Image 1 (cartoon, rainbow, N blue to C red):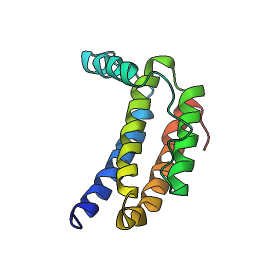
Image 2: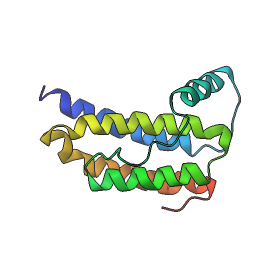
Image 3: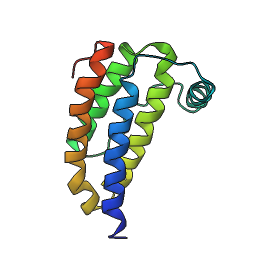
Length: 129
């Protein structure tokens, strides 16, 4: 189990950066893959998932709150379900990592990195972090 944590942390960081990079793209190609992802995400996550979904790591909880506020108020409706699904994936990964002391230790840094990346990429939507 101990050997899995660095891999999970690396996965969470990569996922966070990928999520931010994908969320910051202002072009919508409208291809079948994006449509399928949007439809699936809309079915599974049609409402914001704020509130009691805390990770328990201040940097992560702050990032999620700011990112959700941006998505809910600035991201075009056509992209919201996809961006929310990406955030939910990151949130679930972070929650899993936060379940152990070793995982929690690296989460603050991972969430700060995700926040810094989102700060730049989400300006395309007019968001400020």
